[in-house]
Length: 424
Image (cartoon, rainbow, N blue to C red; front, side, top):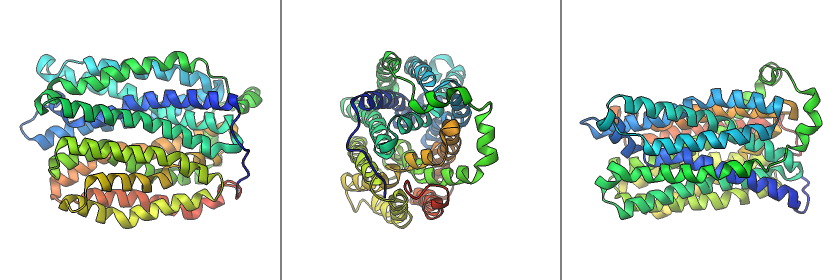
């Protein structure tokens, strides 16, 4: 059972909200690509087969994730050696500029093969930035409010999901106000241009952050190569961290990127209904995250992690069966999945932080976090779309989600050997 202080101090709240706001803006920039992946695929990867065009769009989504491990490791190295704040400031600017450029990028019809090449380059930049952004946010808030690190991490990811919610709201507005042809031709660009401009606001806000007390205390004894020490001394923690993150990674890949296109093109729901249900699901998910994190400061976090994972192991196939049969309204299915997903997503971040000491915490979080999100989130939409094309099995996403959840369930069972009992 964790011991918690009554409340955050005013200074902790200020730093927590500033870090969260920047994360929300950056995650909006990254996720809005997945929201409009189908339209982007048609604009930059034209093909006679709509499914092939969609796979091109999902490939653009996936390549951003492939850049995450490299970006995460480089930015984490900088954060463990030079300070957490320095990494935050630069990532907002680079992410926002690349998002704005995506919104203004000419299509394949306008400049030919250069269009998809430039698109993928910009996605690589986005992936590089986001790979260090969220591990940095976890490290920052866990060290800023160590007595209530779980709740602090829950607030961050709740705010990050506000960025996702904003992306789904933009999708809802665009799909309800424009024709399908208008969305495909230019409507999808609204999300990128708006996100890029909003993201630029995060730059001066991040500059106001102070360095964490934990880093200030160890800044004269930093390790030369923190990642090397992680791999040498903490290999079990790295493996456990990948498992802890797997369900959240898979769930985010499905909810944020894959489901909109899947529900529309494969299961034949209309676009406004899909956008409305996704918005409701993300809203429930966002509101539930801080509550679960709060509970995780008061009971063993591995129990919440394991409960959420078990629900998805057992429930993924019935969920997709109901969706494919149109037997349960999407406005019920997606909020229920958001509520269940919050059980593991509300505690996984602070459990990653608890695996490592401060001197290599940023690198220790970034390595398993980015491995997990690259493997189980970034490539999931592309992999599932390919399986659908090859087999025609409309319930195929259930197998992928249940597999991710099974890894997290195993991690919940065995992680106690790596995390102190007062934090587990």
